[in-house]
Image 1 (tube, helix red, strand yellow):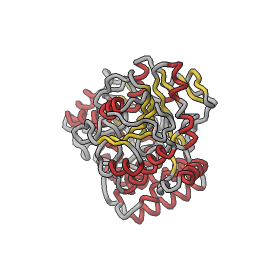
Image 2 (tube, one colour):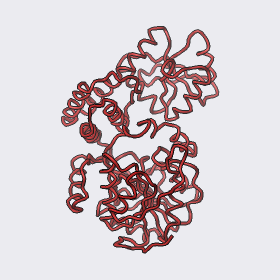
Image 3 (tube, helix red, strand yellow):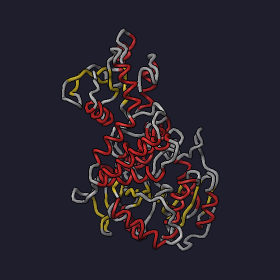
Image 4 (cartoon, helix red, strand yellow):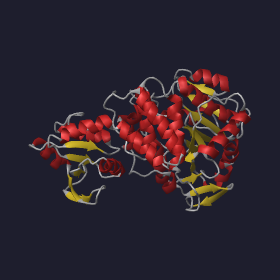
Length: 466
């Protein structure tokens, strides 16, 4: 299908495309704000997918719209379907997928329009950029200039760089992408695959973070079916990650070029380029989000607080009980906000984690009192985060399990440096089938695969592992 290009377009050769969550509640505000910012900057926009409200937003904001897209069995669009539609929809030479909640400021738009021209010397390319999170919750679609100024003010006061593996904008020239495997949008892993795929094709990867940062409104995953786990470690996320060569696929380690001061330079961002993670700002911004969306349903607040811990790189307690009362959570939020404003972010995080972990800790203590040893399944960052919590709360860790290891070993514990055994999957199964019957704590992004391994030798979720 053809349509007139360049309708008030910043770049007649560039089409932005996206797919929306159902346009209702808070995500109606967040997505309308984002798509409005693209259109206010003059970009042509294509919305793909017939999620409730998408067609109406497309009509309201002057976007093009395609209803049908290939989806998985859960109804989530495939990344391949989105790119296939965008690639064939028009004769734009360059297309950019942008997540539907990502805001593009006028200064970023001005720099972004120059990318197709600057990249000509490289041939095929993938342009990506990092995002800055801000606590934006209100509708800004009435006045473009006032909205842009408000975003600038929020960034000055609360903005913080998100990690280089969280990528929300992919700008490419058509023709080189090749076949995309069946990965679902809105789940971890596919964005990292895009960078790995570019490197496999010998395509330049441009980091535009310095000249073209985008803004991400802080939000949780309470309204997502399955919550935080569905997005980060659930079955669809696991399927996405199965296509990764390794755990890499970050902007900072994948970039071959960078855009700085309007110039295309060789190499990734240098160490003098500041992308520091301001923990105090991050905690304050996310607590403002939690407080804004807090309602009488404690489950919603618990999920938002868990997202806060995850973004702060802390251990996230599993949800085991609804025995947390809104009043208690309200006090925690207010005390956390006060601590964060006083530059006591770690205190706020410890307080939130302690409260959310109470049901888990009570369950674990009951099991350990029955002389069952505790083994942490995993050896990476997730295991370290849990062990930090265990050390502070005097929880005994007896050893670890490495499901990929071929032989047993030992490793210094993350808590006190004492050597502890590392079991293979086979040895863990033997131990469980004997008289010992350990309790297992899963500490890995490969949670789904580990659950299947544990269930294969008779362990039960909520009884033998969490």
